[in-house]
Image (tube, rainbow, N blue to C red; front, side):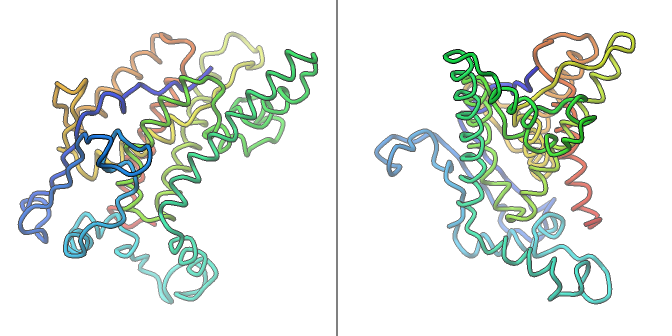
Length: 315
């Protein structure tokens, strides 16, 4: 079973993110970040689909400062988080091990995090192809079995103590269309959220969303299994983690508009609500049996929960 992500990214023609003064009093005039189609000659190398496909780390300094000083930034941006503990928070104060680790990770260029996640998904995809080709050509299924044991989230793997599959399944795709759909969505949605949260915050959102998605899928399959037979199915795919990024973005900018099919304007909040209802209905009625729709729901809820935690400075 695969967490097959809806092909949202190829349908996005443009996105306008506007933070209005009525919501963010620190921004005058309102700050609009536009993402529109461009011609191949206006973007270097082969990146021809979208202006902001590269993480937007070179915005004009005044706009960045305005955004950081806004109320949403205080709830989400790493420089606006306060733990409210004596000595600077967890990890032994402002110079403790955790704080030093955060500083080192956040010092890494955003590009490295962005392309690193894409690269890891590509490496795991290639490993699936190699394992299957080896099995077909030689009859040796050891490599394929190893992939099943280490890159599938399932009750069987959890019972065997392979807890890391909750994370590794979020970098795992066996089907070409599966990784393309998820990759395109990540390519469009991740850069802006990465620029808002910073490296540590974004990794927490992405990895945390993947874990919650995996656990939700396992729990739902256990709930629906027949009798006392052991669960023999599992799921993999980055869509749960990516959905957490999408839902977090919808909480930050609920009125951001996406052009569905390049024609229908859909606000971010409506898009996330529609995905939630569609996957929820499919899970309850066991439609789309080849898709971990419960895992999708878990990813969406993880992104919303992450936003709430940042908004109220829980961590």
